[in-house]
Image (cartoon, rainbow over all chains, first blue to last red):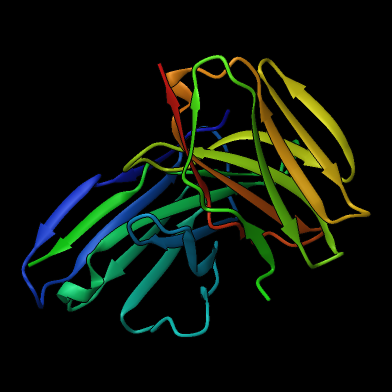
Length: 116
Length: 111
């Protein structure tokens, strides 16, 4: 299967700082990437859809200015959590949509964010 | 009503048992159906991918889709302790990229 990487895998930061998470599709190009948030023992909650070269589409209730998404190339999307607070602590997972072949969506390994 | 319903479990079975995991959905526009396996603190891993109705088999895993009943299943034969994970069903419509997920079923296979 296709490989999607995320960096960092784990980050601990102080309240008020900003954190950037990178999502890369390693062996295919992805015009569309997705960012999810997952709370313990819960399913994935879609935060936003990231389209290469255009603005991201955010789900209802997700603050655009809080969660900045940039999809600068066909293999890289970034999520920046600005002015992080403890309630932003969560597991953030990206996925990349591979349009060639069977149109499958592949997930990264996730980033665990802890805001102190 | 949620778009996708999945029994969260937990489900515990002895090693070697046949496991049946199921999801129901309400949107008749869904055409692509997936099962993901997620280990604790890891990202979901695609297990099975099915288009429209029918069965698909891959090793010990069999996915079934019944669009008339809006019901999908994943069967695991000869279950192993390494199968212990959360299993998420997901689906989407034609031309749509975003997935609709079930809540996930936590499975434990006891040696």
